[in-house]
Image (cartoon, rainbow, N blue to C red; front, side):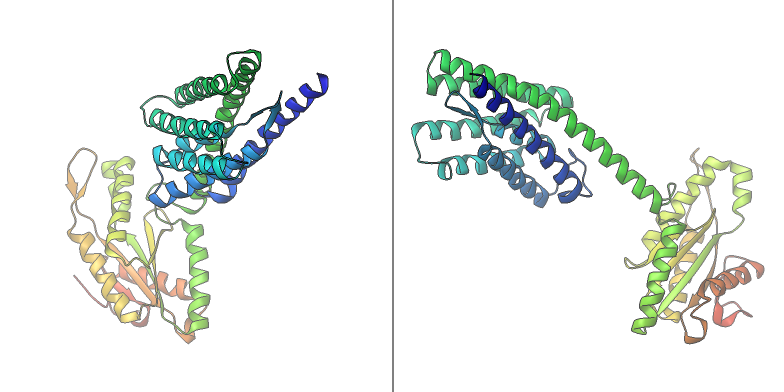
Length: 374
């Protein structure tokens, strides 16, 4: 009796370890950029369903032996996929587990058909529960109740209403309840850790106010783009943009309105630029646009189009009133003679644009005269 109990506890611990390891691997390796519970794409739904099916199958291989009865945590895979991906992934997981139960674990008998059917019914039930507008904890509890009730009925149907059938049902309920609560906590903990990690990663590269690249990311992208352009002998143009008289905006309308203005400028720059352009906020009111494979003359045309868009755009303040602002822009492109000082030349061109009346585009090739005046 003691040996049997020891092996049963050993099997339960092994199942705990398998699910725990699986959660860590899927969270940190398979879904690096996705947080548990976020709405998945169609491809992600399929992926989640198949991975859940793999987990369920793995748990069926590492069963809990108890008095000539096989118990396992396969229903935990159903709950995890339902909570992590929704109804469809849960059904896919249930289908994979059911097919594996029928065709990979010995001869097909009445018991295997009942077990497979039970898995699909639980998958549908758990999938429906996880679509409900209830808390995370309640979803876990209701799902565990469905698993425990239906699977206990299956044990009684297959093994009979006797000591053997009731003992298996009781052990299963205890195993699933304790395991379910543990995995509910673990999945939530991993989701919070992943969300925090992704936020820290984003804040290290993205400007918190505008959502554009920050100065650190600009430096990385500029050096990468410069090396690639020199190596491939391609065009590279840097545009530095500065909001004219921004200090007066802050002084007159307040910093909250100044922040709102910066956000709106960032949105306009994204709309007015190409998808391949690298847009960054590199200072208080200073932005940059790195144009990859863009000839100098074309970059000047883009710069002037951006200047006009900002000049004509009504910027809305927090109280609903609108104001107009302008940009000064300095442009420098890569040539053999200036590979090491593009940023300095773009900055000098920006300085000249401001010195000569603002709301202008200046090229580093024509620092003595503005390329375009309003």
